[in-house]
Every structure is written in C-alpha cells, then in structure tokens.
Amino acid sequence: MRRWSALLLALCLLTGCTAAPAVDLGVVQGTPPPAAAPPAEESCYYTVDTVTWEDSAQDSDGTVLAKYRFCLPELTARRADGTAIQEAETEVESAALAAADVFNSQFAAWTGGEEFRELTEMARWERAWREEEQLEWVSEFFTELDCQVYQTERMVSVAGTYYSYTGGAHPNTVLMAWNFDLESGEFFTPELLAEESGTFSLMVQEEIVRKIHAAAKDEGMAAEEMFWNNYEEIVAGWSSYAVSFDETGMTVAFSPYELAAYAAGPQIFQLSYEWISPYLSVHGREILGLTGK
Image (cartoon, rainbow, N blue to C red; front, side):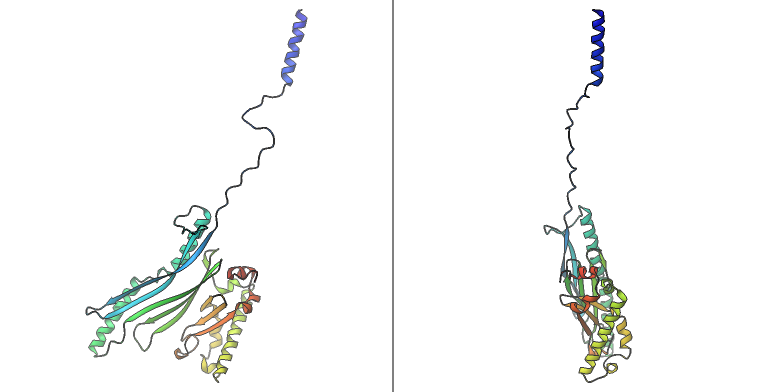
C-alpha cells in the first residue's frame, strides 16, 4: 500500500511539470491588432488681404503739410475650416504662422511712424522757407504705395508702385516687387524657378533687349536714343529690379530713370508663361501653379 502511494505521488509531480502555463485572463491571446495610426494633421492654407494705412499732418494754420497712404498686403494662415490661426496647435500650424510672420514683417516698416514724422518736418521746413522767399506753397509732401497681389497655392507675388513728392519739379515713381514661397516660408528671386539659372537669366536678358529694339524701331529711333546708352548692361541685372508674376506670366519692370529718361516713364516687359516655361524646373512650375498645364 505504501508503494502505491509513492507511485501515485510521483505521477502527480510529473503531471505538474508538464502542465500548460497559467493563462493571464487580462491578455487576449492570438495575433495582436495593428497599432493605431496617429491622427493626421490638418493642412493649412493662406489668404492675402490688402490693408490701408494712412495719416496726414497739418501746420498750425490748418494747411496740410504731409500725408501718406500705404495699401499693404497682409498674409493670414488659416485652418482647413477657414478660421484664422492665432495660436499654433500643431507643427503644421507653427510652420504656417512662421511663414505668415516672415511675409508680414517685410511690410511692417511701411506703416508710418518715424518716416512719416521726418516727412512732416521736411514739409514744415520747406513751407517756412517758401514763405520767407515769398514763394507759393505748391503741394503737401506725400508718400503712397499701391500693391497688386497674385496668389497660387504655393506663392504670393506682390507688384508695388511707390509714389513720393518731397518738393521739386515732379513726384517720383518707384516700381517694386516681392515673391514669396508659401511652403518654404521665404522670399525668392526668379532664378530659383529655373532648371538652370544662368541660362534662364541670359535668355530673359536677350528677350528684353529684343523688345527694346522693337520699341525703339516703332518710334523711329535707335535703342541708344530711346534708352540709356548702357541699356544692355542694365538689362543684364534684370532680376534685381521689379520682377513679379500674375495669371499671364512674368513681368520685369524698370522705374523711371532706371532704363530711360523720366519723360519715357517706367519700362515694363512682359514674358508669358508659354515663353518662360521651357526654362523652368519642376519646382518652379509647382510654385507658379503651372503643373499639369
């Protein structure tokens, strides 16, 4: 009897060594489910509005001494639902706000302040001098900036016309331009759109020179008579002048005095997208919104 008890105890011990491990009822057995993907960040987009800043200053007798009016572009980053982003909640929104800040900072200096006070003091001195010399006060001093804005999904292009009068025979006109890549958050020069910047720059130069010759011929003049003698040298630096884009193509603009006499006015040369397209890179076509066209 004692022998059978010992045998039974040994069998029980062997059974305990080979039994299946205990199951943790808190863990579901089988193939684990795939990890949940993190929620996708919503994309942002941008809108551009034109905001007008203006002011005027008078002399003690009520005569207007100076005034300014600047119509400036203002870039706003927006969520997909259209609301303006005030505080970033995602990395995408942080990048969008940073891009808008870079753009708007470019135009912040135009909002008046110290420059307008200096203009007013110049006008006050000019008027006092004219009274002493018994000369007529012709006009208040002024500065103005008007902007035209063109936008694609990737770019904002601003063409500006700046007018100023600070005495003298006539007001002055200066043409300006700014081109901004919304994705990189940086301003760019037109050569950055080209497949090969050197070739693009040279071909644009030659096309503008061709247009200059055609314009002079239409007036029955030599190019050197209608434009400055070194017009080819000036045109070689075309990208440092006012270059902007719109729905039709690229515009290269020279202010009065830059390429010809004041009486000739600004010199503006338009190059269609069809003309510049062969020289553009894939990146350039994307920025200009020409992909698929």
